[in-house]
Length: 480
Image (cartoon, rainbow, N blue to C red; front, side, top):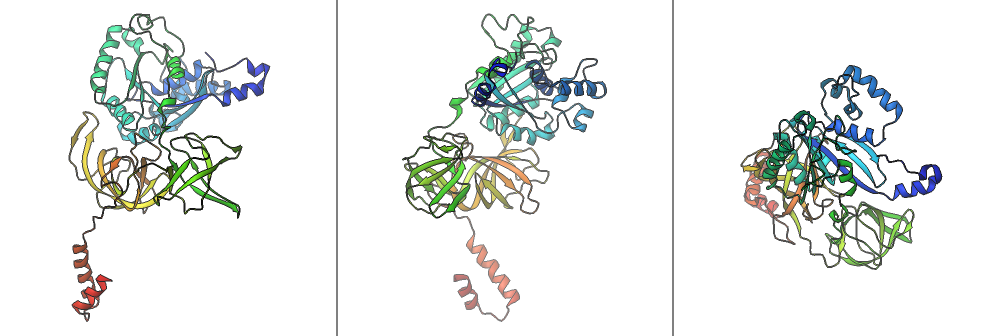
């Protein structure tokens, strides 16, 4: 199979137009160490005719010094480009690759299998619609298999492809494949992903990756009626994954080129936006009507999730960066406290009460993790109490910010229901979170400051530095 089309030779402009309008699928490969993730991507690129001659020559040469497949070209080197990756034969950083077929365009994220690089796996999964979870047919479901499955599910990936790799090492045994399917399904009962599919293959030899294998006739007949991996990727339905009902437009920039134009720029996160539609600005609650939906190529009759647009309104209302435009009848809670699942990504532990910077959609503000409800053991999915979070830990937490924001559930709208945590001193991203709902009543702002303790501390501070002040003076200062 190849991405090449006859239109390339006959009508290049028509081919480019056809290619531009192809559907795009973002997916990741994940799983335990040495399950064959990088080899699988290399095999897909090779068999889809997406490797240039100079690339093939380069990895052929590199295979002699860094390869792990003997005299055969090590296709994993296509994505394992770091010197340390090639020396150790492992994936460390997330590697992205693009390829296409006649039916669809793809962006692949090859993620690490080692536990210490779990944060890199979460980064790759954050923009994916599908996850290919590889399992070594010899070993079955491993700890990292469960870990990566849980993280993919936590990040809202709805399509999981369980690729049972290295089937050539178990003589393409249908019985072994069924054992692994049953083992994974027992674990998957705790996941929320609605679409889970199973596939036997050999990435090294190309069995059932792009081309159908003669070694697995039982997979393409009987109760399986299976597809190759590329056929599955081309046909999986992802358009329904987008939220087209709940309008969400975080304002990134107010465009004011002259006195006659005021537009609100941003990327539409969810919903469909049309001229004439009644909208509401949050957190102010002011309402207006959409006058135009403007883009570089002209006005749109409708905008859809993922499109970068500029919106003009019929009324002059106060909207700035960080505000949201939602449907006029939307009842979205406003709160400065909410529940969230947090993935901690830094060696320095997370301690409740420490002040961090939070970035939610287009808004930046300060806040803290006020409490950790429980930490999740990703191996067993059990919950246990903890007072801090270390590297790669995942926990349900209470987050408290310095200002009220619209609180969106991550599974409803990932673009506005997620955030990152930034260290205020180093400016390093130390965590990522998925909002699971407001912690206080809708429309209210919680206030957890202990004012009695604050007054005691103020009294002590004033008496230390201003001993001549009387109690009445201190009380008056506090009241002011």
